[in-house]
Amino acid sequence: MEWFTADSYWLSRLVLQRMLAALYLVAFLGAALQFRALIGARGMLPVPRFVANVPFRRAPGLFHLHYSDRFFALCAWTGCAVAAALLAGADGLLPLWAAMLLWSVPWVLYLSIVNVGQTWYGFGWESLLLEVGFLAVFLAGDDVAPPVLVLFLLRWVLFRVEFGAGLIKMRGDACWRKLTCLYFHHETQPMPGPLSWFFHRLPRPVHRVEAAANHVTQLVVPFLLFTPQPVATGAALLMIATQLWLVLSGNFAWLNWLTIVLAVSAVDFPLLFGDTAAPPTDLAAPPLWYEVLVLVVTAALLGLSLRPARNLFSRRQLMNFSFDPLHLVNSYGAFGSVNRLRQEVVIEGTADTVPGADSVWLEYEFRGKPGDVRRWPRQFAPYHLRLDWMMWFAGLSPAYARAWFGPFVERLLDGDRDTLRLLRRVPFPADAPPAQVRAGLYRYRFATWRELRADGVWWRRTYVREFWPPTRLSSPRGRRP
Image (cartoon, rainbow, N blue to C red; front, top):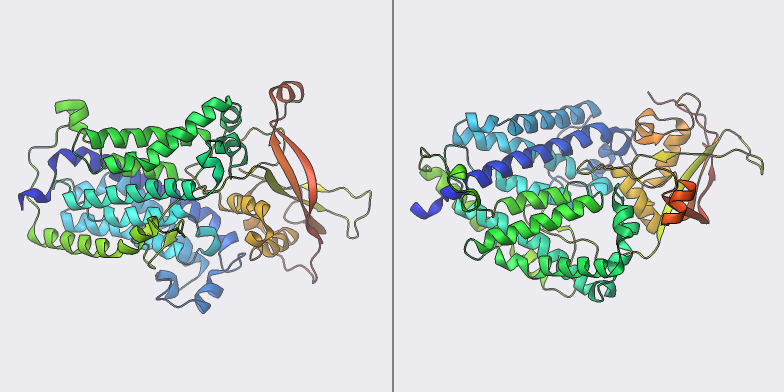
């Protein structure tokens, strides 16, 4: 079938594959370094307890067959190794069938992790990585041109990511329709980056232009992805520029980078760079079994797309929702509402068994979320600090933290080393943990230019109320290794 492949997208596929491999590496590295405290056998939301209550058909993966912390670590580090090999181009050294099997490995491993990750893996970019990772299996090896149908499916994913996000905004907070959401967003977003303070201080007319440009990029430009070249390439480049703007303005894990990966699939590089981006002249014709497989997979994914497509136009549009346990076709969206105020949970501990008015309370510092008012926000994305993100949700409502905040406090009281490793500064050593821990809710706002110059502070904060009362262990500590 002559129409089956698109030679001119050979370089697009190559760039997409290498970028996707890099994001897989970041995702598996985060899983390997954070899982013990979050979902390990003695974690806040243990995997063994989860798989005992959730059947395999609802959350398929390797950990229904066997779980131990050692086995999870083996899977995560294996994912890192395979992702690194793919980043180095190992798939290009293999025959087509073997390259497809190699790309299947990180997908199966990460699916297994996400399906037992519970609250910690409930973010839309987890499903997005799995959906794109599944399609990457069928992008073929270096010796065969990329199939048109898979390129179309990648654009379909990108369309749902952007258009879904645009619709959820227009249906949600009125400030998006008034073009005023960005008066607040840079200050109240989950994890500000090093430039967020400067973005927040931009003139309000610029914020209105930002919001209007966002609507154009998410509600109009996605339709241009399905037009002939060079219009589709122009649409993809506009999306890439918008995503890079978001990368500069905050920390959104790998969401922006993965959206850029998707946009690359629509870029016709020979159109931009001429012969320097021309495909190799020795590309082989795809074998029949591969053509049949791609046709079957495409038909199946289009069938599964019916519910996500209907969701886009539903008055009750679901955001970041998976319609199947394999996360093959999902709905996406972000910031349907924007907070006007920033509230942060600040956790403190004291060595006093019976705290009094003169007790000294020392504050725990997180790596990414605001805490110390003098600390300039750092850049962590595409790395995902899961505990820090969930602490932001806890500041919105205690309901978001009901399942895990109590176990988190218990582990601070117990001096759990795996939990303490997730924090930036721990005021009590693991072998001498606090006698009591409490948490307060604070209102944070970015400091003004004058406050920054005078006091060297990036934030101002005001106490709002108690979030968690002073708590101690009810039984003697069982020291954790």
